[in-house]
Image (cartoon, rainbow, N blue to C red; front, side):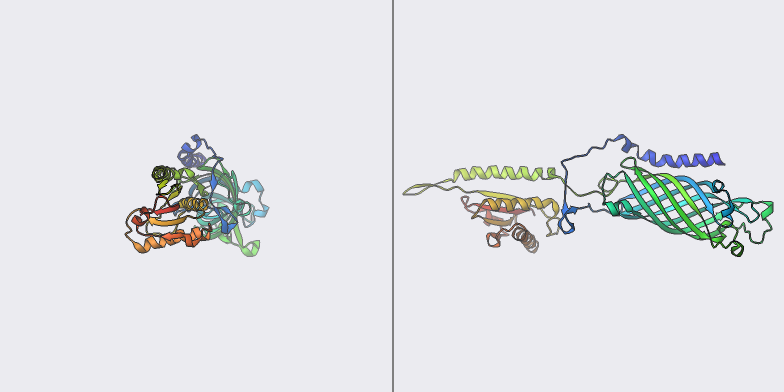
Length: 395
């Protein structure tokens, strides 16, 4: 029986190890040039990327021992109370600080009758636990932290069966060998050690409180005992499934400036074309004198999410670019228009007003120098000698 039990545990432990094989093979590299988005309303702390329901799930297998306690066990030898146990856990982290798990657990228990003789029985159960990362609560969340200390608080049930059929306990009035389903409460701690992006080693110690009848000996009057239970000491491997973005944990929102390369290339192309036009219009010949007028025009493109007038984080750099260009031109005006004929006037005006408010309120661009024109043809017909900044809303 013991041999089959060990083979069963080894097979379970091989499941997450096989799933995470690619993670062990990959070498982790850290880009020291990465910067992060910060929340000014939260002390400029780094912003976490939004998670979806399918993110941050995990599966784990555990093996270890039960140390049973209950009626008469204060007279038992300490090491004789240990018996093998195994567990399976499946859960989700809702935030870096808290989550929940379902745990199924099976083990062998040992008790001590009032005649000093020991007996055994099996129990199998399941429970729902709240899990709390004390490390992240008190030290703040870090993506690459190698160690986490986790608190466990939960409740569930346990089913008892397979009591020893001894001749001395068959007729004892206070001893019952019948199967039962009992409610349990649980409290404990877990140490979680990261082995790779997908796999971690965890060591868990929890105590289960169960009704006095759990050990089959419910003679409360003689023992003064109203609770039975067992301490679970388990070691296991936990596999973290991939999130929608390919990560396996909570991640901070990074500023990836390479995303703007396409926009910058287009901006540079438009600037080059504009410089050619300006070169042709730099000299104005009059009857009395030749006057050279120099002007500058800057063009910026801003895109919005479908049916939204909110500027997303990827486009904030373009608003910033427009504001910086306005600061270069002391007497210039800024025009907000569309790249093509406006189909939805209300939505265009909402988006334009959002850009106007950010420029005025965040970057202190005078509102009187910002004009909204939904007809792109009007802006295209501006005098090329006029210095200005043009913000195009991509329809």
